[in-house]
Image: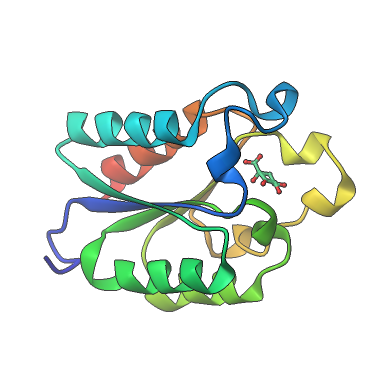
Length: 148
Ligand code: DQA
C-alpha cells in the first residue's frame, strides 16, 4: 500500500532496547520490548491502524527500516536509544522520508546525564515523549492515528 490512504505505522526501536525487562530496571522498568510492541499493536488496532515493528542494534539497519517506511507506512514512532544522541544519519533518514514522526524515550532523558539531553531526532519529529515509561509508545501511536 502506498502512503496515501495508508493506515500502517512503523515502530522503530534502536540499540539495547531488545534488553528491556532486564536492562537497568530501576531506570527502564520491567516491561519488555514484546510488551511495547503488543501495546502499539493493540492501540493502533483500536483506531483501525496496523503496525510494523522493527528493532536493531545497527545504525544502518535502522536507516534502511526508515527508508522502507516511505511506501509502507503513514507515520513513524521511533526510540533510537543512544543513537538519538549521536546519529545525524538517522536524523537525515527521518527528514528524507518526510513522514510524521514521534520520538519516544522510556526514561526522562532530561533528568539523566547531560549527554542524553540533546537528540538529533527531536528537530525532525512532530512530537517528543520522554519519561512516560512504555505508555509513551501508546501516546505516540494515538498522536499519529489522530492526525493521519
Ligand atoms: C532511551 C534513552 C537513551 O538515552 C538510552 O541510550 C536508551 C534508552 C530511553 O528510552 O529512555 O537506550 O532512549
